[in-house]
Amino acid sequence: MPQQQPNQPRTATTSGRLGPDIDLREPFREPDVVRGAGHGAPFIHGVHTSVAAFIGDAPSLPGKPAFVRHPLEFIEAFSSRSAEGEAPSFVHDAVLGHFRNGGGGAWVLGTGDGGRRDHGDRDRVAAYRAALARLERLPEISLVVAPDLWRVAEEADGIARAIAGHCSRVGHRVALLHTRQGLAPADVRSRPFGLAEPDAQFVAVHYPWVTVTEVGGHERLVPPSGHVSGMCCRADTEQGVHTTPVGSLVGVVKQERELTERERESVTGLGVNCLRFVQGQGVRALDAQTLSTDPDWASLGVRRLVNYTRASLEQGTRWAAFDRNTAQLRALIRQSTTTFLKGLWRQGALPGETAGEAFEVTCDDTNNTAEDVARGHVNLDVGLAAVRPAEFVTFRVQHDIGSGTI
Image 1 (cartoon, rainbow, N blue to C red):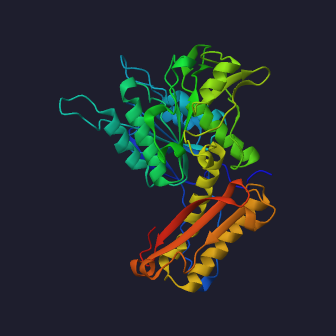
Image 2: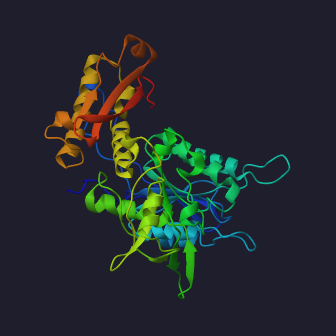
Image 3: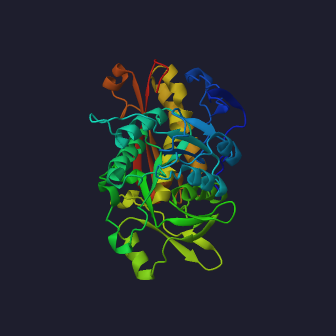
């Protein structure tokens, strides 16, 4: 049964100015309801999973994050790919591929002029870090895409590590990255970009590049990551966020190179997801794994389910920040969380014959010590049977009590 969650961002928007003839669009946010222990346990709603953030080098991209709701809005505001004489930017292709494959909205951000080395050259890694910092507090982003990752090949590893660290730090985002253009199967590296745990748990890499057709029939070779992000969103809508995000890539004519079965197995064994042409179905993403070497976190579907659950619980229990850490408050948090997780279990997102086999919730004296109370923290620990019944992957949600912040 598909996960019951909205795919499209809210329809109302606020507008600002980025410059002449460019509007800044941001998702409308309903005011958070302050709910304390005296009001009963609030119902927790699932967050959106269809919004991606695209970071790139094209000069036409905004220096501050801008939200676009559909492809025409993006084209009107950010149509230029790159300045004359510069290496091409692939943000344009990635954003349009995202929308065409089912993506529900996109934050778009350029790296700007930030990050200068002492001798005057631009430090792209520092510029990407600065751009990522501007994305940190934005709501509802579940996917981060860097279409221009390989624009300067020697800086790709540093940029990838910065993006992976950002997703790991935020805790509920996944980076969709890609290998470089022209890479032969034999040259694919094991666990690309030199990522270590836990950052590797938040990154999926796809191979090879794909060909799309532009207006007028001109073919263009582009990274697959934007199309994959839209496909992930489409899978969420049609089947649920707990399912493995695989499927056809809409708008893709062919892939850069055809792979033999032996080559495909070799590449997937290195932690990289292969694209493959399937007769009658076009080019498909057949694999969905992260770069993690930990079996519990190797599945991209598991990673995204845990991300979705954690983000939903963080947002759905933020009312606790306006109360006191009492036994009554902790009971309400347990009640809200248990109700939400039972909903996931009943929809088939969590395995197990009983709710006890599907998840566990702890928010009591055992994980809220006198020291936690004195520091103004309330801790919610959750275990999900995302892989096997009664064997849990765990995470913690913590709120700062009395401060009205998270």
